[in-house]
Image 1 (cartoon, rainbow, N blue to C red):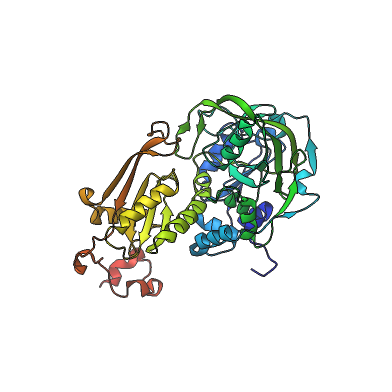
Image 2: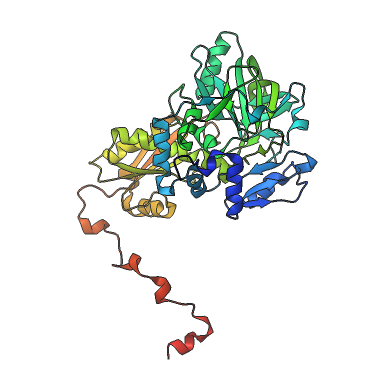
Length: 463
């Protein structure tokens, strides 16, 4: 990549070109049903191809889905090798680039003040018991009153009316901004960006201090400041090259029924009284694309995985130099199960690492610590370490009554127990007891030159 060349994930349409050129963009027939049809096709291709849906249910706006459904794709989008991805994201969080305000932008080419969302946008219903159509790939951008600091995050947004959305706000920065305004009896301005570039999608999930604008992390990932434009109805700045922007307010003192909705644990988030967004304006490109993320699919899981891994690695290394790698497993919904690799920890230190990891983010439920001879990206290797190095009466860490994920149905309203598995070799053990078997030279063999398909003539080969 040259000094002036942006990585392919810096622009949504460039990324689609990249996927198409490498056989990873599927084009469906026209008219795939918005109700379950779009999600069904996207799920069947999940992890293999992104999908482009022209005229879904006859709607003129096409849908795209599955943009980031493999870790390797995320690395390609950022223009780095897969093994460098977490470090690259960490650096972007440490060294964000201020955004570049512009006066005019593609995302504001068309303006709607009087609209009905269901007519304006192709709004799919994904899972069987979802309450109805949801906006699932919208970046919710808010601005703190007074300081002007922005926050970017993704929330499930139920289409509750022609210009009204129900929102699930978990205890993070958006909710903190809103509570400050609600205590003053005021609404909070919001902008919802649909059809952002892949790097901005990834940046939106960064776990950073309150008030750090994730759009500046997106700029660092792309290698130059992200162009942003001021909204028409507020001081919020949004990515200038986005496809669609919905402007409105989070309403103080208003709660309405929202849910159920198929969530990342692959269960339904229950129906409850939740926050409400009243929309005022929709702007978009002349021929926009609509991005949807299917609830519980790989894109849903992996989008939040990389930023969390980067944050975990930074936090743990700050206090524990022995930590060498981390991994949030797909089987653990990329949220609940964390594997931590440690290099020759001091006696008892692996358990301290486990306790620290459980405290970094409330989502994490189980932490497994392993040695450097175990590949944390390989769930089979981690399970092997637990099977052969772990004893429950010696190596299990249990912390009851802790804050967890409210979307975990096994918790009591989000309160539950956390577990740690110290699957490292016990200190002071004689070396041969835990030395892994291995064949010298095995990895250096040129198997292609040493073997061929046996075919039907294998009998002749042994005569």
